[in-house]
Length: 232
Image 1 (cartoon, rainbow, N blue to C red):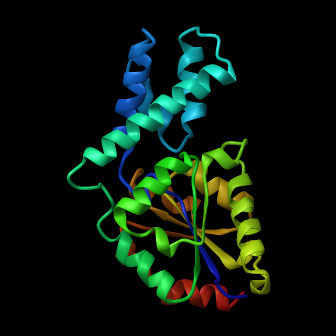
Image 2 (tube, rainbow, N blue to C red; image 1 turned 180 degrees about the vertical axis):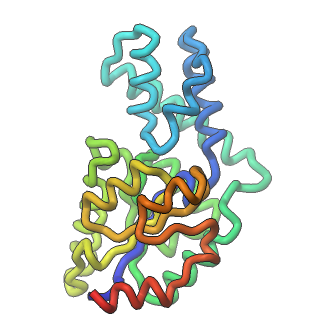
C-alpha cells in the first residue's frame, strides 16, 4: 500500500475565513430580524452553511423550507465573493501553498473536500493561484449528508477513480487533512488515514482523533507518513 492521494478540507485548512463566515451569517440573520445572539460561532465551525443556518433559524422558531435556505445561501455566497474580492490580503494559511505545491510535484492526486459551496472554493483557489494543483473539488453542492457522514470523502475517491482508472485507488491509499472533530470522524468512517492540523482546535484536543497531529504544515514529517503507508 502506498500513498496516492491527499484530500484537503478547505475552511480551517487552506483558508482562515471563519470570521468572514460568522459575520456574513450574523448579517443574514439580522436581515431576517433574527440577531444571532452569539450562537453563529459555535454552530458554524466545521459545518455547512445549510446545516448551520437551518439550526440557527429553527432555534429562533422559524419554519425552514429548502427554498428559504436556498435563498439565504445564495445571498451569502454573493456576499462572500464580494468580501473576498475586497480583501487586500487573502487569509490563506502561510505555509499551505508550499505544502500543496510539494504534494503536487511529488505526484500525488489532490482534492478539496468541503461543505463550503463550490463557488467559494473556486474563488479562493483562483485568487490564491493554486487551483491548477487540484484534480477535483467535492463541495457542499455535491453532497446531501453533512459530516461526520463520509459521503464527501467517498465521492472524492469515486471522482479520482473516474479521472484516473489506472490508479486503482482505494481509501486506504488516501490521506485526509482536517481541522475539526467532525471532519476527522468523516475521514475515519471512510477508512482514510488523517492528519489533524491545529488551526481551529488546540493540538491536545485533536491528538487522539487523528493518525498524526501538527501545528503547521512544516511540522508534518512526510517521510514518516510515507513509511507508514509503505509498511501497511
